[in-house]
Length: 292
Image 1 (tube, helix red, strand yellow):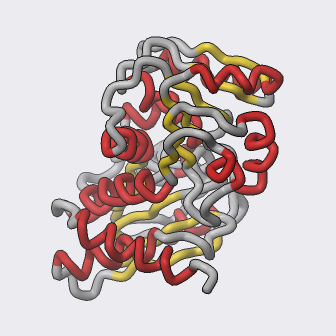
Image 2: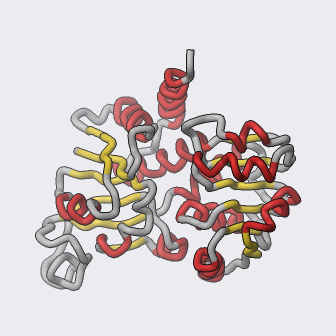
């Protein structure tokens, strides 16, 4: 069976190390997991090529929303979040009308037969598990920095952790509206603020930064010395400028990645994920990347 993580850029991804460690620990001989450099333009062709030899795909930026029209089914929770990071490939049962190409199925995937593609979101689980591991299983007040696909998952995670009205700081009015819609779909509310109000996140108990590494320095310049618990979803390069400048406890993106990957392993294999083996493999790769 094949599986892969897809995105652009992708060379830094730890997902191959995590998933391969899981396959080895589970004794899944013949299972392969690779990293594929795929952008939005190349995604439809990849999705169209999926067959019964595939177990699934892990998706990172910029594909977390681009894949939505290309699959047969979107999990109801993932649809509410409006972003997915997982495609599970299963055998197709039934005949015409089963939702495949030619039956009102996904656009952009002509000729795919024999399998059904279901999109899932394990990022929310990853955020919740990472926060719980840091002692923040319940969140009284929380904030999200950024407005992209990962920010949607972070917002929903804070709502699920009991935060009554998270703050989200975003650059564009369009993304502000999208986050409000996501919160409403899961029965919550969000206080969306523009970038000029970034210092306000320092008043929260928990802050989740979803900005990429190359934007981290600008955020760090505003939030230097902030004291809440920070979950910075970046794990490479690490530490980010924001993590170095933070004044309180910092949780790196590795824990989020680990737990969302474990959920993906379970979805794709039907087996319980060997979390300890996956953590050990991922940390070994991170150590090997440290400057000597």
